[in-house]
Image (tube, rainbow, N blue to C red; front, side):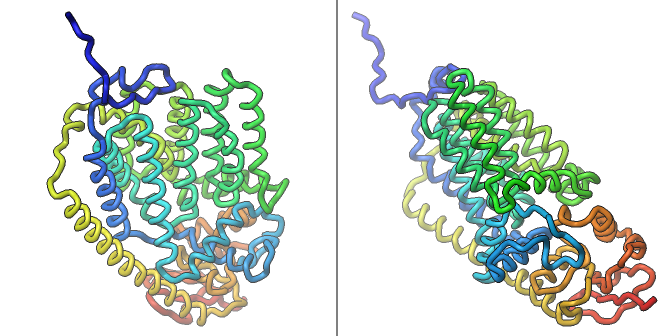
Length: 480
């Protein structure tokens, strides 16, 4: 008598929205233990956070958020324009007010406040990626490898405090939600519009989340539930206007996408720089994740999202973080298809090793934060010294990141971030100044009264050095 093999005790395969269960694609996966390797996921994530804490820094375009958030808190309303810029910026649509206020509140906690916030955002994103990868059926050790590739390639995005701090975990959360809905449609899709509203009040990358949502609704959900899909899409789109800027909110996004830096492809809008090691790491890690992700079938809407994010990454390297975060779960499935990843040895004395590793990583992260906090404290002290020399009523043009630090200290800036709030001629002059084409500032209708430059840099004609502190020189415009 022939007995049929029993499936008792076998792990249930996770269905894929493309129609073929992962278990059918790779039967070995269903019998592979995942619990013994869970420590590797935690170790890799902890190691990544500890490593980032050794190099984390505050971005050059971050402190203007703190300065504007402080203005909102002190005045108890959203000011018209930018109060620390000495030109007419009235009418500028300020959309991410909530993000500015939160940045100011976090900064008030001390020099480590923003650093800890960035690491927390990264940790939440890693947890979300682990949850998404597991739900798709990837084993823990394969997830660990994908996270390593992500952390190595995206160090400039994950290890620098920027306004996109809020967008990193929110993007992962939205992607996780939409992938779950792709597998099994439910009422959870109604969480998308409020998520878009929250995201839009924090950071402009909500446009990326809206595009991903649109791809899912149009290429997946619309055929099954036309009316609910259209309603969700409309409410998500209208969420862009649920900000303090109200009906003018779209002007903010248009200004961000069409400012002089975006037009030139400079600063955060610059393409991938293959002249640096970071550029090559980003390219190689993204290609590795992309190749791994494309080895396994996925729903059509996910291919569309991958193509769109890839195009955005080619346009500006800053968008590479969204593509990398998007690819990790699918890449983990492909890596998990290799048998040797399922039989990775379980280390003895796991509890002891887990405790020791946790304490070591915590110690490394704490030491790194303390050291990096001293750098932040030093930079802020230098800004206070220069602000004392400049005063609060002289229009000042300073190099980044000192420009934003001076704004926090109450200095009136001739030009600075947010650049899209400036008149077009000052956007041009500001970028020329930052890139070393200094003479263009002297042709402005009302040139700045003071310049702040690093020691050793030459000032344009018509300015003379009057003071200096902490590696910076202050120049005064000569009287006509």
